[in-house]
Amino acid sequence: MKTANQSIKPVTTKINEKGNIEIGGCDLTELADKYGTPLYIYDEATIRSVLNDYKKAFKNYPKMNMMFAAKAFMTKAICKIMQQENFGLDLCSGGEIYTAKSSGFDMSKTLFNGNNKSYDEINYAIECGIERFSVDNFFELALLNNCAKSHNKKVKILLRITPGIECHTHEYIQTGHLDSKFGFDLSQTDEVLELLKDEYSNLELAGLHAHIGSQIFEKQVYYDEIGVILKEIKRIKDKFGITLKEANIGGGLGIKYTKDDKPISIYEIAEVIIKSVEEHTKKYELEEPVLYIEPGRSIVGTAGVTIYTAGSSKQVPNGRKYRAVDGGMSDNARPSLYQAEYTVEIANNANGRNNEIVTIAGKHCESGDILAKDIELPEIYEGDILCFYTTGAYGYSMSSNYNRVLRPSALLVNNGKSDIIINRQTYEQLCESDVVPARLNKTADD
Ligand code: LLP
Image 1 (cartoon, rainbow, N blue to C red):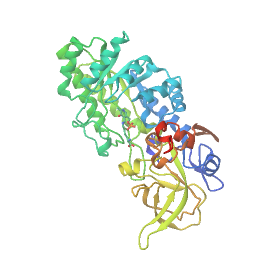
Image 2: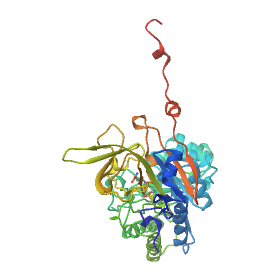
Image 3: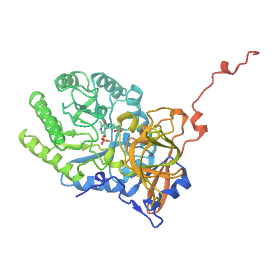
Image 4: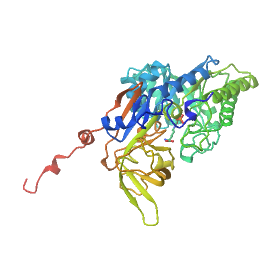
């Protein structure tokens, strides 16, 4: 069965009677008028359809725990949806923990990930009731044990391992290969087990964790990853007599940004994961583990679009045609960071116009601030509303105030209703943290 991550557009997308694009029953041009642009728009129906597909796809594996990787897009409203749908949260910073906690999220269903958690973050995580930590390195083992001891607590840990699996995705978002900044090499796990036995009595090893990368289109890498994890669990069992009960296989399922992308469905990936668990537990004579997955992009990526207003244009003599929009690399860093490509449409009725090849430029003072290169669209006029699809993951969450451009607003749309889930930043908020030392206010006469 086809799932939302295999389509470019949110599930509710249509062209309305005015010829404008509508998502979640809302006309994008009306949203632009009401809320301004740039604007992130999230279709609630798409998010929930993906969550339901994940639940259905894994329903035959009772020991399943699903967590949303909050780094893809996190707001308090998103936390509420995850809680309602019975998803946990994979968190990776004090700020993400704070957001989850202040949304009222059940913190016992969260995991704290990251390769350089600070003592303060760990302390805060324990105070907030996070029960599970994915421990990334030796330094963190000591830090976490000390911190747990000072709280008089025993915390559950998973060991983040690098399974040595390379997947064909952008180099910056590959994580499972051996030369990675994340996790323990498999040659180091014995040492960890010795330390846990002898020194770190406030840590309870529950299982292993791996994450092989992001925007993955291949099934085999998941099959292989689970094989590596279960083989290591078997090795640890034989050598130390300890049976680890949990396996977290990370996230990574890809989505469709352009028509050339061929992501796999959630059902297909679940089938491979379950098959690999069955085959490898049989092979290694292990009990089926409590299985965790933590997808991010595939849950919110397709649900989100960004709209911009078209502004100035430039025709390079005998060269490219540029059309600039009112946002750019500050609201979406992915094109300049990863050469990411998007599918773009004019959201207002552009029938009857001739097509042209155009490059959509951002408004930042940087030549590399290009949102889409050489794409074919009906001729764009100043004031048109441009819709960039599949910006829901790692768009807003990687936004910045570069050039002191304000962070945009984000909406949740559903059945013709639109609600703000992030307010547009104001100039006052922009300067809120700025401090002018008193001595700089002195004049020459003082
Ligand atoms: N678990 C761990 C430990 C992770 O590091 C990540 C993503 C995920 C889960 C979720 O992966 P997903 O299902 O979203 O692929 N900024 C990049 C993506 C970085 C991914 C970082 N880790 C981008 O814009 O493509």
